[in-house]
Structure formats: C-alpha cells, structure tokens
Image (cartoon, rainbow, N blue to C red; front, top):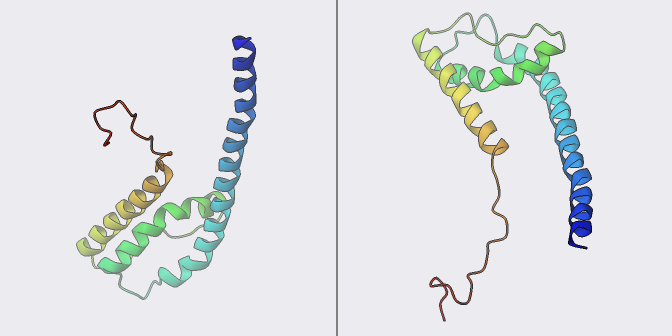
Length: 129
C-alpha cells in the first residue's frame, strides 16, 4: 500500500515540475523578446557617435550589454560599446555596469525564498517554555 501511494505522489509531482520548467522557459523567451525590442529602441538614444562617453555612460552601456543578446540573435546589428569614449574611466564604468547587471540578474535568478520556517520542537533545547 505504501508503494502505491509513493508512486502516485511521484507521478503527480512530475507534471508540476514539467509545468514549472515550461513556464520558466516561456517566460525567458518572452523576456528575451521584450528586451531585444527594447534594446533595439534604446540603442540609438544611448550610443550617439558625437557624444563622448564617460564613466556613467560606461556604466549604463555595461548594464545594457547583456540585454543586447536577444537583439543580436534577432538579426539586429546593435552597438554594445561606445567607440568615442574617455578611455579608462569609460572602461571602468563599463565593467562596473556589467558586474552590477550580473549581480542583479543572478541574485534574482538564484534567489530562493525561505519556505515556511519550521517551528521549534517542544522537546528541543531551542524552544522557549
């Protein structure tokens, strides 16, 4: 009898896991399309050839650079780096932007909210009575 209930639990958990992965994949594709179109719109506004890009533009360009991937995959030739820059300060800002974007993305992607906190057992030394 216990084996039957275990098999039923496993079989009912499987579609849920598959469904979660399908939702994550669909969300990722949708987000990629939205980011791709958004980057295609924003690139001409933030990468002006007559503008000398400094640290803050480097930070912005670095943060936007990973978002350029969907645009590039959709066949758009979008810029990811300013050719007309202040040099070292722009590059430092660019690196800070890439790292900041990665920190936010991976922080959100691998965030695991705490499940319900377990109540201390009545006999455990941590319980207060």
